[in-house]
Image 1 (cartoon, helix red, strand yellow):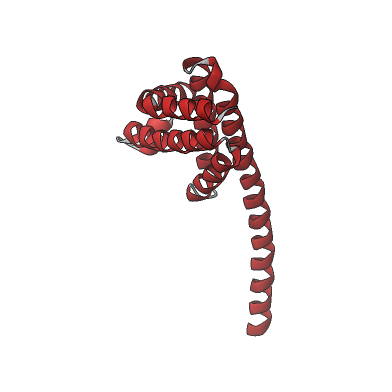
Image 2 (cartoon, one colour):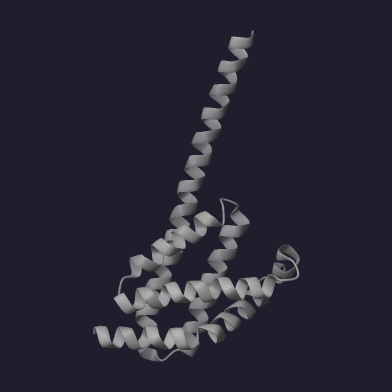
Length: 155
């Protein structure tokens, strides 16, 4: 893709960020009506702000034609959400909804690069979940050994 085209797509995303974020959150809520119960009274505004932030990361990755930039941003986002599986699944579903909205609403020229970026982000989130799971198992083993060591010292 030529850099001018990538910049135009990024500009388009930036220009309609608010609308894309609103539509993404609405689609997410249609898929998971528990959002309002789990995130409180301000959930919708909070989620719109989060999605707007992700769309800005997306626009930057598109402008530079570097999917890995979006993937790294989503890894950081996943880490900041903590290792709770429900938070990670919320992020995953939100990105899937964002991808669907973008595929429906943006011009065809924008579809390929935006899909690649979002798919790279989704893959990164899944890989981060695997890493967190492995670390958690490793930590549990280490904690058990430490506890046995302390028990032996005390006895």
